[in-house]
Image 1 (cartoon, each protein chain N blue to C red):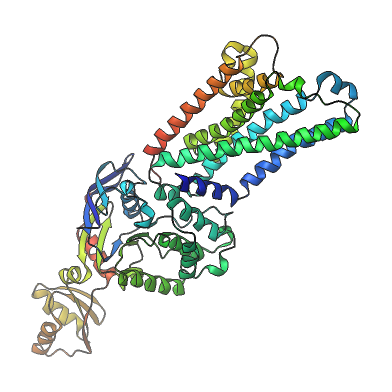
Image 2 (tube, each protein chain N blue to C red; image 1 turned 60 degrees about the vertical axis):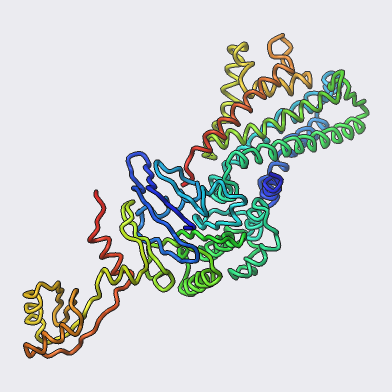
Length: 298
Length: 253
């Protein structure tokens, strides 16, 4: 059974169609990247999942039903949606104690999660004195309070420095190693590239693609990079064979044929190659390619 | 629900808002009382007793309770903590109900404390000036009922603030708008058309207090204490229901 099941989810804010007929499901124990540029509809979708925003149409189910029907939901689903959602005058520890109390979670858990996010030393300080990275970690601590089986993280890397980002990646890998299901949204693709199993790609409110990164990358086709002093001639030969080629001076980016095919064409025509390699499609390339070729209707 | 109430109490204890309310309540009621007891001619006390002094406290402190109620709700929107409140308790009516209960108790408790301080201040002031403090002159035939009604009115005022805060959400607008309405608009309407003014929310609440303390207008205009109490209760119930209804339908973005 899918942990998260979204069907025809649509949200309109006045004239703005923020989310347009989005459907997807997420299986247990996976970490899924929810990718899209700013304003794509990621946050609105996540907020509809947990009942903060009412859908105009469609349904969102978490763990088999609407979020609001879960008993003690904070012990089942942890959602990081707003790292600034703490009273600035309250200490980090008290901010967590408030949430723990309201959810019926033992307050001993507060110290554990503070330790996990390495904020124990700053727990007494008012949140207004926290850096944005510390607030982000406090929000993650809040999400972990109930040791939930599902984590919904909206741009968890916001405000984190490189060290914080590394910490976040480790954090996410640990959660999946524990069998948790994670849906993590981001517009910084490199942030999740090394971590996620599957991706959902959304743009202008429309879901463009869903699947394992490997499958999507295979569908997108690898790029062969080639460097030759006779780049113009090789480009011409490849174009004659109907291959898509981009040339910048002596460098060619070739999409479609394998590196062996390109090498054979070069050999057949006596073209000297200085470099020939197959480049793996990065998540960023994949995203740009999918968003570029499957533009949602304006 | 018990967990939710405990969380609400912790919210109050972990910021300075509640402490600020208490200090303000003591400052605006006890300090003027001390000045009055120190500087006013003894004849004033013989003629008016302590009714004016206690009446001022009993009127101003519930107003502070009202502001406190508004702040406790609008702070959630202002600082974005409403997101966690509704995530942890998705049944939103429970969040609002919890605040209504806790703010009611705080309103009652603060006025009880201020009332006690005022009484002690008056007792000391009267003794120092060689006067006799006659509480019976202001507490009426049934002092317990008088005290209970005044405390209840203070609690209801704080709960009213929660309802208004949940309805309007914008903190400065709600605080300023409510105070202008309570102190200016209703006073004008009451002055021009008492028959209408007596049914307005803050006038009704004030009539509960002033009727109980016998410090209100004695020209025959106004509601009886039970009537004023029922009108106040109706306003608070209506506001609370509207607040819950709208809160359940609004998006938290």
